[in-house]
Length: 419
Image 1 (cartoon, rainbow, N blue to C red):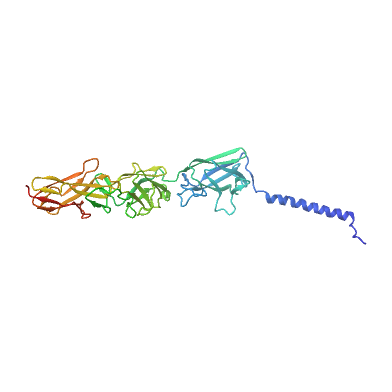
Image 2: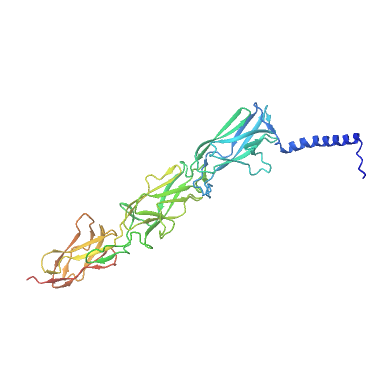
């Protein structure tokens, strides 16, 4: 059995030498592929920091389930930052520095989006900026949380540190915004202020005892509502600052609520709206129960608050009008108290209500009043006096003032001749 002859020893040693020399050339190439270009800026180097946006940034107003800001957002919430690196009065081409934010949750560092080869990006867990041939490096800082306060951009190299402050405001109108107000449509202006009047659509008549239940104070499909919106004028030096500024409207009254729909089917006590480019918010609705009262609202946005807050007077919605005859038979003669008239709200509480009065036949019975305002508790119920004039049956009719219905009539009384 023959075997392949081994090459002479000198030829074998040559092959090993060439392999070793090839490996020595490949080793630096492998290392150079892992190394970042540039060099650490020398301790004598200088760094200048320029923030592109003058003024403050805005924090996020609300965050989603993943902790990300909900869009749209109030601008500006991010800004570009340019660094100029120099050594010995000349651009420090290739010199790099480390950038961080204090506190870390205040801002997020990102590469500058317009650069195809970013001069600033993350390297080995740190954010590094490397100077171009002109000495510049650029990056972006943005607010991606609802954190607000004073933060700092910190640039470090060798044993040097350069700091630039960034103010982050809560989302909302700055203090320099003006004419911050809430406007409400469809209110009746009176000496007492803006009022919501009753509709009398739920008003029923009775001549006897009150029912145990008069229904819900929030009648489905019949809730009184008024359209409203918030507006503000931006500062002249920052006209775009109002767009997407959040405004919080809150009802401070238990018988008033807020809704995004006119029927007030879904109501809440606190509503967030955004201002548009013109400084006006989307429309929303103030909702009022049938109990009525003095409805106070709080309106705030960032550093701004409407003070005093908006106030709306809401008349109770009468549910029951009782017209009771105090006598069934009365003799002709002098004036006598003949009727008791009361209005009640949904809670069966006697309330103020202006009404008009008339009788079937003023030749049989005369009343001196064509209208009267009914008293509320704890005052006594309103009594209507009348003068019996001639024999015959007669009833008292009571209607809401200036309206023809509902027409609530008493039981008939009989006027007879004096014995």
